[in-house]
Picture 1 (tube, rainbow, N blue to C red):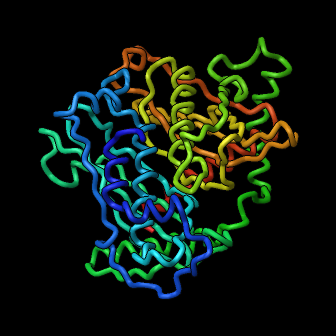
Picture 2 (picture 1 turned 90 degrees about the vertical axis):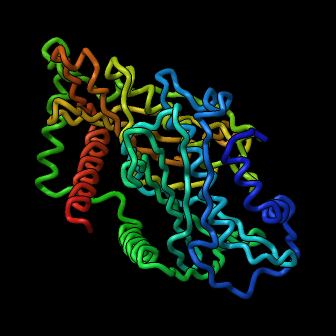
Picture 3 (picture 1 turned 120 degrees about the vertical axis):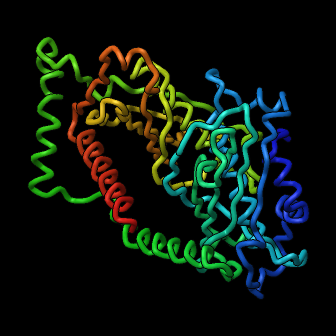
Length: 401
């Protein structure tokens, strides 16, 4: 297996769980007695010794002497899976273990780029459970000479939601109960409960009907796109068609990329999507982008070994109101394609936000990112839906709800 701090932590944290999951006793009875556990029972931490381990530092270093964010996101998913398994384990080898799948990832915000010159730590625990759902909160911290306080050392926070399935019937299965002890743990539980209720209300309402005001916005977006299509010589040189920002790559999913349940590891999908999004922002801006956040990600369908996976990216829209920090919003859609069946299904849709480095000479010389405009109504709808989603999240952050 690949040797990393996360891999080592996984094996140290749950050797007996791994053995049961790798060779599950399918004819054994399911767990019937639910236990009550605390967040501390599942809490796990791993340390990246970048300051002393040269080999490890080389594995995680990008060309600009920063940590490869894609690999970090991949590790977060791996550790979240370990934590959820620790919570669900009943330590009984006579019962069959649960199958835990990543259902979604809440918005992750990078507070500052991590360096490969200082040690990095990831820690997390289960903060909420439903009947068959589990929410795991992770925190990435890095202490430097400039950041002495705990709050200053936080690099990134993330929340992963897992769903428990019976490994034999593949139906939703109940999970162990959670009993928060401290005031902070109780607060995390209440906040996660509110997020879960919000997800339930939004379920099934992804596509909405556009009202009159939205139709006007839609037409305004399409107006400039029509000029590009019908009269390209007269189009605004400060704008570009959405379709001209697209990149794509594809791969065959290999056995080495599977998790212990035999499906393609969710963290691998996140990493590949991030790396394509980074490249898309790079060739669009003409300078090294700086990652800011990834929005809520839903895992719509599993990806299996042997699947033909295609990632398609585009710059969905830019936000240029703040010249010191222009925003580039990237959409990456992962398609599972089966040529034999002539079928293609969306597995995941990712939304990443980047900016450009403030020290870039190009920004100081008055360089300005181009505005992205749609050529079709479908593209215009996607842009408006994401703009509205961004505005809703911003309002919630400002009100604290």
